[in-house]
Each structure stands twice: as structure tokens, then as C-alpha cells.
Length: 69
Image 1 (cartoon, one colour):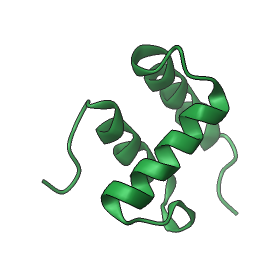
Image 2 (tube, helix red, strand yellow):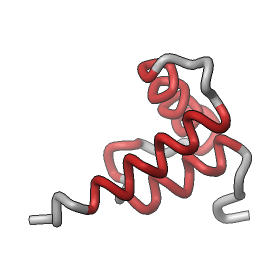
Image 3 (cartoon, one colour):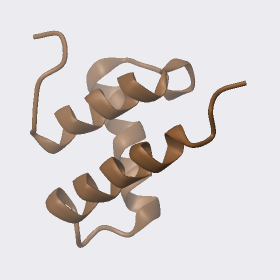
């Protein structure tokens, strides 16, 4: 089983990205927009991403960094 305490760092980083780049979006809009971006722009199914990969793509969507190019 994965360490449940890993979620604190994960959600703290997600909160930082949400508040910095999309503060006007509701939580559902934020996650739905991310999923649609992953599907449409990256052709990636969110279901198969590890937590660290999800954060890297989320940062890319927000404009902080580019993943794989």
C-alpha cells in the first residue's frame, strides 16, 4: 500500500498551482479542465498516471514547465 501521508505534499502542490494559475476556477472546473487538456493535448489517460507524473503535467498545463519537450 502506498503511504497515505504522501497526499499532503501532493495536495499542497495542487492547491498552490490552483491558487496561482486558476484562482477563479471552481475545483471541479480545475480538475475537469486538466483532464480535458490531458486527453486533448497530450492524448494521455489520467487513470494511468503516477502522482508525480500527474503533478508534472499539471505544472505544464499551468505554464510552469514542459514535460518531454
